[in-house]
Image 1 (tube, rainbow, N blue to C red):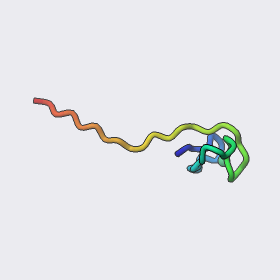
Image 2 (spheres, rainbow, N blue to C red):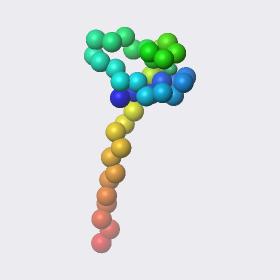
Image 3 (cartoon, rainbow, N blue to C red):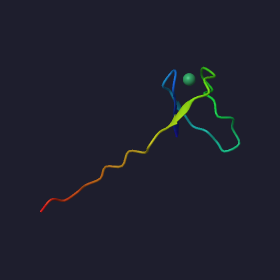
Length: 43
Ligand SMILES: [Zn+2]
């Protein structure tokens, strides 16, 4: 999952797709990290 650097929409890119936003055509996409909540137990 990527996020467009311009319109900030989430972009789901397939490997064969060109790296550009399908909404606005912007070519810089940021990799979106899946939300992983790390629980660190403090003892
Ligand atoms: Zn965009």
